[in-house]
Length: 321
Ligand SMILES: Nc1ncnc2c1ncn2[C@@H]1O[C@H](COP(=O)(O)OP(=O)(O)O)[C@@H](O)[C@H]1O
Ligand SMILES: [Mg+2]
Image 1 (tube, rainbow, N blue to C red):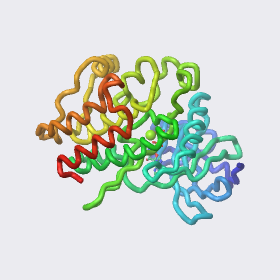
Image 2 (cartoon, rainbow, N blue to C red; image 1 turned 60 degrees about the vertical axis):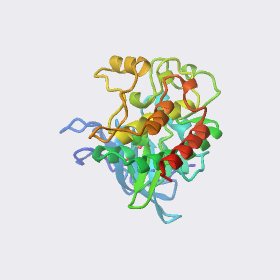
Image 3 (cartoon, protein in one colour; image 1 turned 180 degrees about the vertical axis):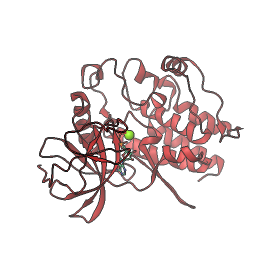
Image 4 (cartoon, rainbow, N blue to C red; image 1 turned 45 degrees about the vertical axis):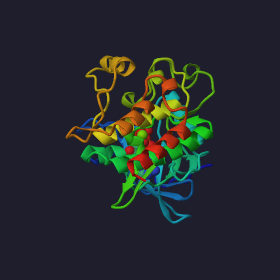
């Protein structure tokens, strides 16, 4: 599909200080941030009108609020500009894969395409909640909120795994939550580094040998060591997410990468406490979360479905239905 873009030469803009520069400047002269092409007002795919920058990463990926002129709804458009080839291939692979997952708990892909100058873009359903990361920067979740988030994410993961994919980046930043007085809903997003399983080791493919994909704190030990992954790696990411949601802390916080990997591979996570006032968590809740984040995949739940069943038992035992 080709895109119709109006006014390609609007120039660039600093995502931090918002100042505009001409198209030939690539770095902000005042704060050094990589400038992003200002796409406000452009139309992609003949239908998505870019309205505002939502997020930007290292100048290569930008996420924009846009209007879907056909459906008359707001959407999020993620654009991959330049960047190393493997990052680019990963973006396309993640986008293709996400477009094959249609589930109410997964961020829906509306369309994929490329712009006239060959940049790939992905149009996503606009998520209106906050990322769990933003919520956790303010407060911890209550037990019942945590268990509902777990339930929604297991629902999503069970489907993703059934389709033959591993997300590989389950963490609060890729989870959107909408919390009201009487309801909590979570959605899994960002399939940027997802891949199929039962394929040859990623070392020979887009993912390079010494380049670890994913966020260290939430990555399963086998994601750090030999790269042989199965869906249980996502259960580990979910386990660490739940540990942090309840306690406000990560299980391992080594000051340097090396310490941190050693702790993750060999140490036992400190006892799970509720919130920052450090009340011990209910032993059944702790056992549930510890099982998800067991170092050995074989000691985790067998799959998302088994973890969901254990969660249902736990919720009814605690009267949290
Ligand atoms: N569907 C969406 N709706 C609203 N905002 C989004 C959406 N997808 C991404 N974003 C915004 O873009 C940021 C980065 O998106 P993400 O897909 O996690 O990419 P990456 O982690 O690769 O930078 C998010 O933290 C959020 O602010
Ligand atoms: Mg992300």
